[in-house]
Image (cartoon, rainbow, N blue to C red; front, side, top):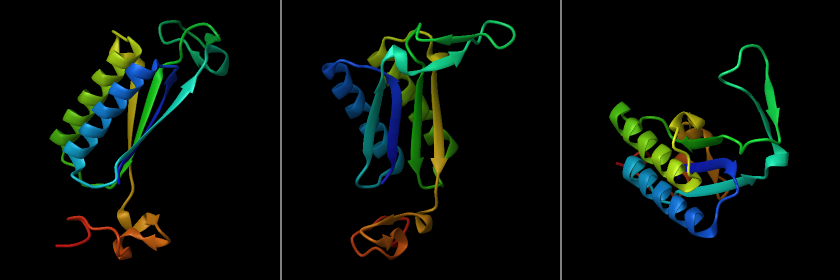
Length: 139
C-alpha cells in the first residue's frame, strides 16, 4: 500500500529499473504490506528552478543545473524510528546511485503518513475493504 513518488532529472532506462526495484524492496522491508508502488516523474532542465543554498539572499537558478531530487513516500503511520532511518538511508543512497549524485544533501525525502481509515481503494475505506488484508486491519 505504500506509494513512493520520485521527482528528479531524466534517468536512463537501466538506472530507472534498478532504482525502482531498490525502492520497492525498501518499502516492502519497512512496511511488510502488499501492493507497494513507485512512480518517477522526470524533469528536463527547462522545467524547474530553485534558490541557491550556498548564496546569501534570494539568488535563484533556472534552467542551469539538474533539478534536485525530491522523494515523497505516502504510507500509513506507525513505522518505528529505526525502520524509518533504514528506509530513508536506503532510498537516499539508491537515488544517489541512480542520478549520479555524490552529495546526498541534494536528495530530499518526505514521509507523508495517512491513517488507513483515510484511504480508499476499490470504492472502500481500507479498514472496510474486503480485498485488503494486513496486520493493521486484521488480527
